[in-house]
Structure formats: structure tokens, C-alpha cells
Amino acid sequence: MQLKYKPMGQYQTNCYIVTINDRDIIIDPGVGATSWIEKNVKNPIAILNTHGHFDHVWSNAELKKIFNIPIFIHHKDAFFLENDQFSMGKPKSKADFLVNNEDIIDLEGIRFRFLHFPGHTPGCCVIEFEEAWFSGDFIFRGSIGRVDFPYSNPEDMKKSLLRFKEIRYDKPVYPGHGEPTTIKNEQKYVDYWLRAI
Image 1 (tube, rainbow, N blue to C red):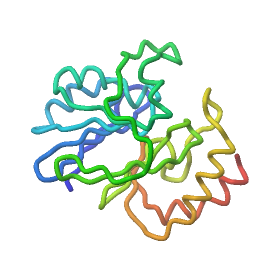
Image 2 (tube, rainbow, N blue to C red; image 1 turned 180 degrees about the horizontal axis):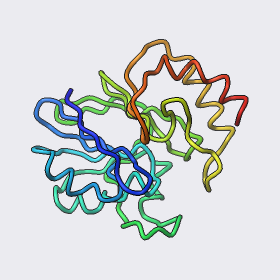
Image 3 (tube, rainbow, N blue to C red; image 1 turned 90 degrees about the vertical axis):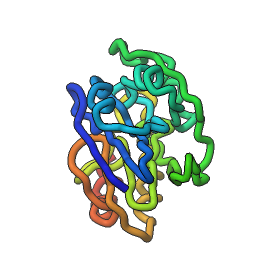
Image 4 (cartoon, one colour; image 1 turned 45 degrees about the vertical axis):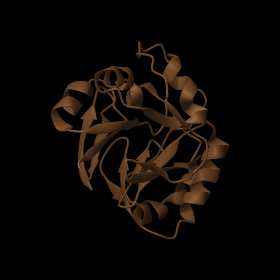
């Protein structure tokens, strides 16, 4: 797996390009991501959204038009794409594949799955590849996603954190904002966040 990423827009949202077997998967193309992506992909095959907030999906529509590739998102966050809940002027897009479970998705020989960790949004997910997690706004290095936005749910976040705490393996974690971390490193802080929510 080869990885490129760049923080995009005012909120410095990490946009990722995952390259496996000469195929590129785009994760969370935020504000102004299109030109950077065009310069750094050779064979894009999909856009994956960890969740539906505008700073993670802003360039969906533009990229889909350019590359004619499918958009994947958890079904509980699909409504974000077709609306502008925060009145930010976000271009509307529409998902081609609504994730309903955590089954492994095989796309041209590249395997990944959406692990559902609601709380920040109803359909907030970690996208898991064999070699790494892309955690969106669920888990950051030393922090977690906010639960005070419209459609956030603190109780769901607590349940998600408890589930996260029980994971027995370790992988690198590439979050939606900030620097990479690991599963094991962030599990050390779960009890603190459970008390803080």
C-alpha cells in the first residue's frame, strides 16, 4: 500500500490517496482537493467518505464528474451529501454505494471495509484496509470527534469508544485531522474520553 495525504481547506481536513496494485482510492476529498488529487492519481477507482461532514466530502461531485468513479458512504450519513446542513455552500453529491454492514468490500482486487463507530455523526466510520485504518473524525491522535454538532450523539460515541477499546489488534491510524497514530496508542485514552463526554 502506498499512501499520500494532504490537509485541505480552512479545517485542514486530511485527504488521502491509497494506491494498491496501481489503483487509487480517494478518501475524504475536502475543500479544494481536486487539483491535488488530479496531479497524484493515475488510475482512480473510488471515493470513500468516512462520514458526511462538508469538510470531508466537498470535492465529491467534482471528482465524480472528472473520473466517473463511485462514491461510498455509510447509509446513515448519505443524507449529508445531498443537503447543505451547515449552509456552507457545499456542492451536492450522491452516493453510489450505501454501506449497510461491515462486510469486506472487494473493488478490483482491493479489499476494505467500513467499521461503524457512530457518535460524531450517525454514520461515522473507520475505513479499514489490511495495513491501516482511516478514522475520519472518530479518533484522532490524542483526541476524539466532537459530539456537540447537529446529528451528533454523545451516548453513541460512548458505545463506539467502548467497542474501540476492545479491539485486540494494532494498526496505524490515519485520522481526518492531524497526525497519524495507532490503535493501541489511542486505546490508552479511552477511559479519559468516556469520563469527559
